[in-house]
Length: 197
Image (cartoon, rainbow, N blue to C red; front, side):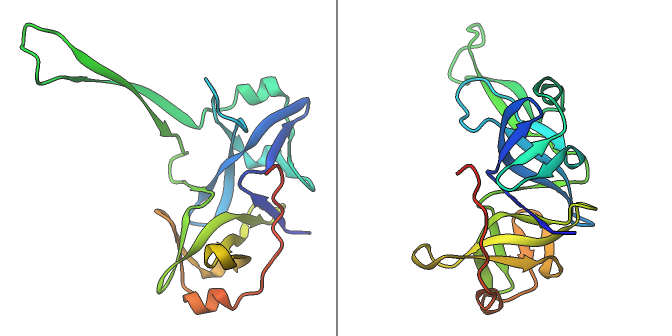
């Protein structure tokens, strides 16, 4: 069994063609198991729908993620976003004048009890911010996260490291570690595949 890196931004293909890229990863925070990938278009122009892809449909190849479904089946998967229309009344108008502002608000949709992790989400060591999320390393047999892939350091001296899953204490509003900045800095660099970027 080989552990599999899932970098956010990796290209995703259905059985019959390209269907986008990994936008976010959805994780069960209790067992730190990847449950879904959020897949959306590479270039979001116009109307687009991000889809919640159960991780059981995904297989990580060398430079992309392959889904065991067609594009038509992919289009039937649950949306990863909910859109609502909100109206607000302008207080400067008289009661007999009707005028309101309408706006569209989109919220991420995540299965109950799970959390999502985005690329460049902040990772916090015990003594402060240490870097940004790049992705995860996952055991393909049980989808258990084994390592967090992290961009660590200053912009002019960044390195990419793999944080062991045992060092993660919380995966909400950023990722919290039980390691200090020095301990993270002392981890050896790893090569992270940046497919499709």
